[in-house]
Image 1 (cartoon, rainbow, N blue to C red):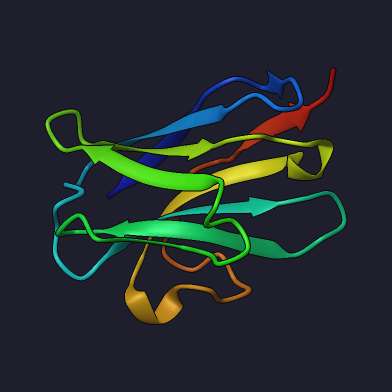
Image 2 (cartoon, rainbow, N blue to C red):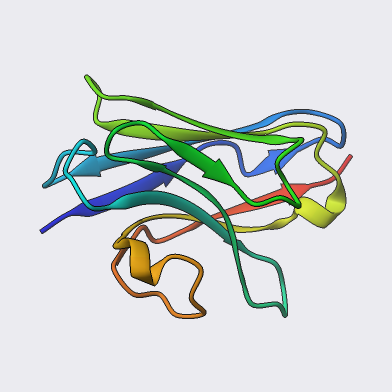
Length: 124
């Protein structure tokens, strides 16, 4: 069974860069036909899909975050990362990493395999 675990800082100051890592066990991030995704959920709001990296390393980021977000991976560590620059308090949310099949990407449900989530607060 694939398991995912997010790690990173719980508190980030405005204008700094947020860096989160997702460690994957029980399956390889190079496995075909999956999107290794980052999603966030702000208080009182629905899921916001930030972007993904595919099995062959192709990435795609939501247009609303494309100027600030990047997703990369370290295959030898079997992990992938999210970097979000110039954060503001509006970036405060629970951040999740997930493995989803392409047809699940962008849905309002937590289908697929998800990490437990990490609370990130942006505050001075």
